[in-house]
Image (cartoon, rainbow, N blue to C red; front, side, top):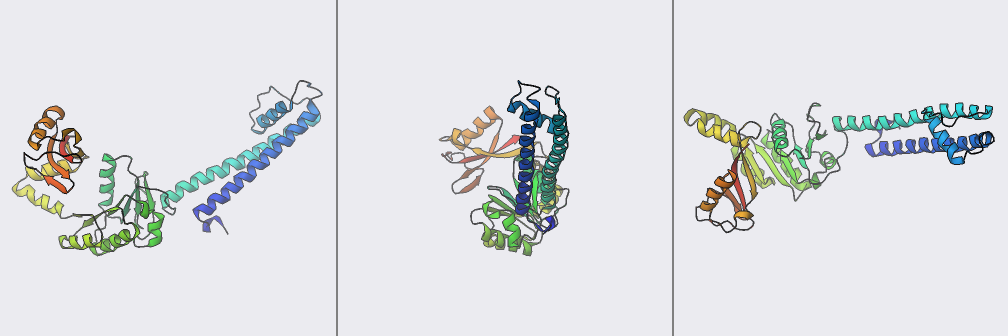
Length: 328
């Protein structure tokens, strides 16, 4: 069986065996060479120990050759030649195997033919013009985000910090390679609603606990995607709505775009623990947050959901989270 048909695990085991054989051979050569060298050279150098001979063998095999210990007898010189040649061959083979493993690992990652061993990561299903936008926005806010994309159309030029599994998002094997059952979030970026529904169904079947976020082209399919298992459905029609708003209220869509994108705008919307404001009325929180932290609270996430522009007499409770506008 050639390397072409071996799986990643089989290739790794094969390389480990080769490395083990090379190291064992090199160790044997060094020990035997040191013993022979010690046997012939100790008469000319009575102060030499076997450890000195072993040190000489290693230095000679690696072609470093400090010159602090040199052979003076003919047999010793012959041993030195053999050790130097064998050492070059052994170290060349070892470096070759290690380099091949590193190159193959990088190639497999780029081509997306390997499996993922992750937990708590983000799995993106499908590739569309909006997928790189999602990745860029997420990375700008969460640089350490661990992203795995599953699709056959992912370009080779995708962000090097994103892992790819090339395969159909509807294929169970492809989903298993992406460790979807261990994912924290699953994002469906398909722009084909019928396919998006199927991908959400497969994703929910593979992972009961993950939060599933899906894009939807036709607003009428929002409920279908939610029934399929999506926790959050984002209509792409929002872009068209914003475009229309520029005609009759141009400042409003500009503010929304500014707040929505951390890469394009001058302000951000953040969510944080409201514990420091616990027991305070929302009207007082507005003043406190603006004067002390230059933040403008606009909503509160409670145990019952998000409350936008809550009443001034709403009292912040322990466990609430504050959603505020801040400068980028």
